[in-house]
Structure formats: C-alpha cells, structure tokens
Image 1 (cartoon, rainbow, N blue to C red):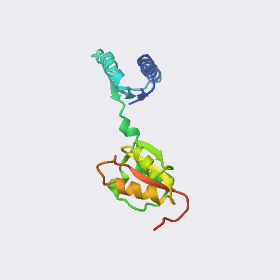
Image 2: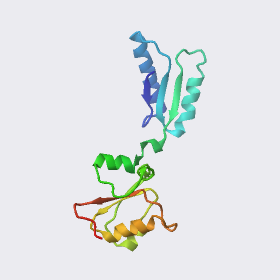
Image 3: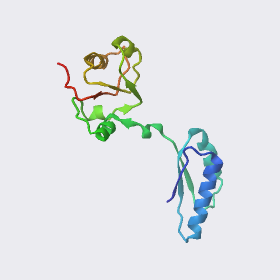
Image 4: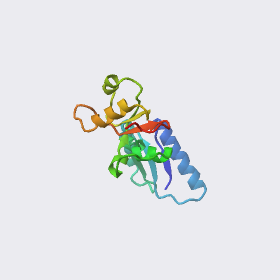
Length: 160
C-alpha cells in the first residue's frame, strides 16, 4: 500500500504524484490494493476526498489522511532522551508533556514571568537559582501558564 506525502504540496501536485505512482507500479506488474495520501492540510482534504470518491468502480481506492500537528510535537521525554540528560524530578506523565515553545530564560524574573507560555520548555543556566525557583513556583500557580519543563544548561551544580 504506497503512501504519498501531501504535506507542502498543492492538490494538483498530490494528484500528479498519485497518478505517477500508480502508473509506475502497474507498469512494474505490481498488484495495487489502495494508496494513502498522508499529511494533507485541512483545507485540502475535502477536495481530494471528493476527487477520489468519484471513482466508484476503481480497483485502486485512495485514502486521504489529514495532517495532525500534535503528531509532530516533541515531548519533554523525547528531548531528554536525545540530549541524554539527567532527570532531576518528574515522572512518566511529566515526560509525556508536549513542548509547544522554547524559551531561553536570561532576563530578570518579573520580565521572564511575563513571557511564559503554555507548554514552553524553559532553557536556563543551572546557576540561575532565581529563574529555577520562579519556574517551580509558577508550576502550581493558576496565574501563570503551565510550562512543559525546565532544561538546565552548564556544568554548575545546583545551588541549595
């Protein structure tokens, strides 16, 4: 079952890719059961589905799968594994949090708190006790967005 990538393509490009794929596989003597167009932008889905639904006698159905942005998001766990970091605090639920934004925390705490966003991964040096404390204090607060995590850089030991 061949898959055609829809992301970043106009409908005519997707249709052309499906037709070329179908032709090449049939020319090679392959049996085709169906094909999938994956990662199609929401605004294009209906037109493509209509195009391929008007072929009721086709032995080659084409399925259109819309793009789902959340599938492309990184999680705190993905990032921690890729960077091979030491986890200081957190559980599996914490590691599954989606990271929607990255914030470099290098300003004074009052200004930093104004820039917090829901799902942000905060990146700051490990000697910035003020930023670390602000993140830990903002986490349970209903007055600030819920961050995804805190990534500490540098080789300094945490201040106690």
